[in-house]
Amino acid sequence: MIWPSLVPGDGAAWFGAIQIGVALGFLGLFALVYLVFSRVFPTLPLPDRS
Amino acid sequence: MVSAGEIERANPRGIPTSMLGTCGALIAVGLIAFIGGLVSDPDTAWRAFHVNLMYFMTLSLGGLMLSCALVIVGAKWAGPVRYVAEGLAAFVPVAFLLMLVQFLGSESIHTNWVHGAPHGKEGWLNLPRVYLTDLGILGVLALLTLRYLKLSFRPALGGAAERATQAKGMFARWTKNWRGDAEERADSKRKLAVLAPICALVYVFGYSFIAFDQVMSLSPTWFSVIFGWYFLWAGFLNGIAATALICVLLSRSPGWDAEITRPRMHDLGKMLFAFSIFWMYLFFSQYIVIWYGNLPEETQFFEARLGSQFLQDSWYWVWDNLNEPYVKLSLTAWLGCWVIPFWVLLGEEPKKTKSILGSVAAISLLGFWLERN
Image (cartoon, rainbow over all chains, first blue to last red; front, side):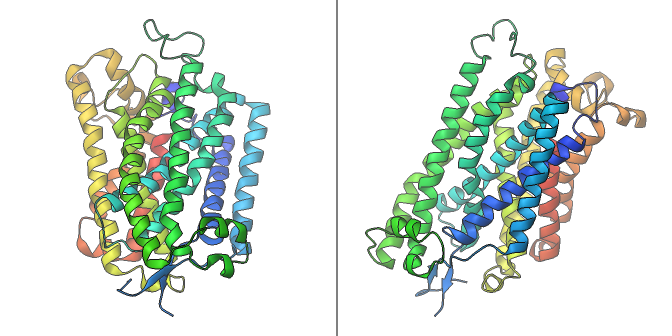
């Protein structure tokens, strides 16, 4: 959706070390934010049966 | 399942070292790739940043929208599944900060209009207007998200300040003036019933602007009024897919094994199945009008992605056309976004089977990442 508008002639422009590396970085940051939120801060509530 | 008399309680605990290490390693890889890219090929680095910011920002807002939808319709089936979706929304304030960073790379991202928008669009396509509007909308969405999460989680935080090993101060602030479990739950339900529709309306109308400004305008001579819906609906679908995947992964954890039941998996599977069809419907609604009109200024968008086939005067299949730029990427993305979710989740049993639902959700998320590229 984005690369064809910016680099129309090169179908491989979306794939490369920089592109995949940046994607993995975002994945790590997203997962870290989720983990911090769901485990340390408000955390995922479960029914208290005790 | 939650039954009468049971109270949902938060259980603050630390992050396992292995998970923390994996996230840290991925972030380090991303920073090295981005900084290295800024030195060697800044355009590519900023464009990769843009693609991923759009994807993860939309995914996190999709989580918030799933929770809002469950609140608006008064869904009772979801139970703690709603909190899993809300966890995704924790990224929204981070996305706002990353959007501020992205402004530094606007020359590389908005290349096609930053030094001169097409005639008649100068007033709309200029950096101050685009970023003031988009940051304003995203700022409002980030504030609404924080308010929503606080309201939603507060009833589960009774006594959390005493039980927690970290962030005791935050739990104490969030549970200030505690009025007891029953009253807190009623108050949360009442306030969320007002806030959820507001969040949904800001997302639908506000995020359409972000889709127009940040994605559609990259081809500044192309336009489609349905593009905003199409873009934000993918976010909602991603929110469902990510929630389903996390539920499948959580189902191995103590406590969650009793919550991630087959009926709940079935419901998540039905949503993933049905809403992937609606995503395809929106795609087709956009495509068929452009196909029928067959105007070059409109068909350019599809031609750049699907190649020279699939247009009115070239509706035939030629294998060689697959070698045209981005055709394989677009067709692979289709597989993940619609073909696989539709055909695999067509029956009842696959929706209830953890391994199948989890795999389809992961494929759907990957498909949309490819589609965003």
